[in-house]
Length: 525
Image 1 (tube, rainbow, N blue to C red):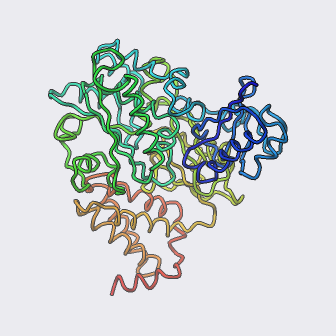
Image 2: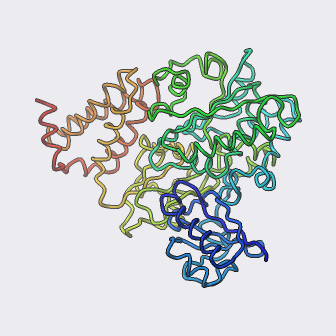
């Protein structure tokens, strides 16, 4: 009897929607019916509204069914789903689903396709080809390839990756480090988690290439503590890669070494900032460092350190394998390659969309997201996490590239999009931004530590109708002080959502909330 391969995700989102029960039900039902199956626990394709998504390999074509619940499994077998049979949950060939078919998946090409922990599967789908090429190149040529590709940091700052690597490569030191910042804390973001859970060897390969390029023999992944599934997958992947010679003291017989370690974060948002993360890695309180010196010159334990986020490192193997020109051939303006946009909030089709830079926000929200989940009009989209600006519908046709978005006072950040319908209170959202900054501030600089607290108080006074015009001027002045005077992006960007709310949704500041008046009265008493 031939064996049929069935794929059920073990991605955290799919698990939260019942994927474990579905996998167990499929295995049990196949056993009862005497069907021979191979059950593969893959990553998620990123179409969260149809998770758990079950895929069946039918003569080389992956046929999708979803969203599948445990109670659906027996009837799926009755319908002959192991042969691609008709059923109300049948979605057809997974690659033909419009949401997925219209994407340009480079970084996420294997996520949802392969067994995340199978090195054989990884290699069969192009894995480690970039590393093999890098092993045969001079370190400077590897750095130049990354520079020529136009790759910029996907963690938020969008700094050219090649420049950062060259700085570290040129810095003289007996020991250098490569650090991956996987402390993914922005609202509406999950790309790092999905990549680690669905294709961990891609991250390992990218970091190893970085180590070869700059002369670093030690690497660390600083992973968000709230990601236990990603932790287990990455620990297993590091162990497997080390056993099979893709990590360690003699990579693939080359005589070159790179050792990788996993460290769990402690739940502080500020440690998403690179120098605070370094402090935490060194066992200290997570506080930002003054710059200069830059981490590429004096970073972890005082040594030259390359710091990038998960998606940046995961883009590197593609560049080495398929060439800098191939990667640079995607995108718009100075924003080259693809971006992993994450749709969250009040959106009908939430999930991950990997597209070349240049797509508009309207296309993402309407064509991929399908509008709001409840059918009401979209009033605002926050792009770039809790410190990102609120984008109004009049700005939705702006191309999503770093420079174009900066011109409208926005930032792409880590690619997270949170959608709000027409019932949102934008003054309350502005207040939340300041409150968030006050809670998460490391306390090192006055504009962030004190400015965010005063910002909450001023917004409360505005909403309570206390000297409104005077306090709006004061709020804008306070935002300018935070923008210009904060030591890092937390205080320096917390004003973005506040100013965008004032600029585009000023009418909401005229509506006193039910409890704001009491807070304001106490604040001025």
